[in-house]
Length: 342
Image 1: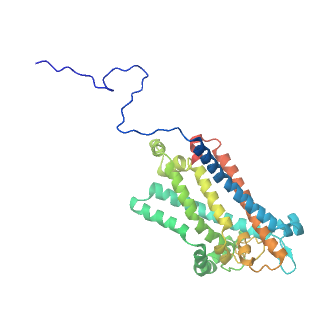
Image 2: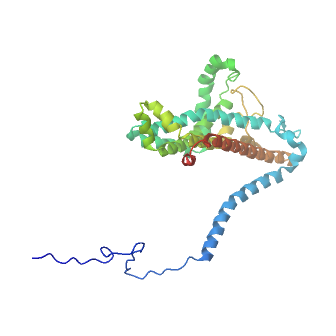
Image 3: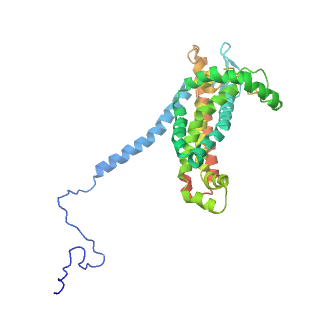
């Protein structure tokens, strides 16, 4: 018995001219219409307005700061940012001690938090057992959810006594020759403020660094290990080198948080408008002086000086972010374009 004649099935076996697109029948009718130019134009306007709103908000903030600090600007000029006196009784105001306290405490916090945050991120991604990876990551992120006033209370009742009785006497004995650790051990001061800020920005640095390290391709690690590198060499050359732009961005975000922190720093820095070399000495920051004295400012010049302090804080933040973008460009200008998104 012969084989049945094979009948070509439509759209599969039947020969079709080259370049012809096969069209399959649809069971139901799908209404098709041309894109609405009106909807597309409205969507474009909406997205443009969302983008421009950021510039508008920043412009309104700057304009309000400049407007309400005009009295202080006319009275002191540029000397306001270089003068060291702060005497509301005699009407003599200068922001240099507060700028110094803000910069020193934030940089100290960054120096302390950077190795800890990067170490936590590398451990949780490269070396941590799977059973501990989740709990450690959760606890690190939980630190970011703690209110700053709770950090301040913990610093007053736990950190400051520990510094006064143990840490500062040891630093004064063995590191006092540097000039950074000398003077009476108050417990509160620039060192306490820097430590509490470091604890507060560790979650930011650790979380962002962890995401950046995870984004490094796994074949990159395997290739370095295949060349005979140790685990530490693999992390240093295969992971951290490729993630350095993202790690630097995490540091800048942490520094921005440290620059603007108010309550915890106010409770621990000592609130004294002076410039001292020793980290044991009390200090003041731009944010803490506004929080402390804004409700007490009854004189117009006094109030205008505090608003100009806010303007100085904005300028310091702008300069720091500008330098950060410049440094990121210096780091990434020799890297391939795919690595710039890290």
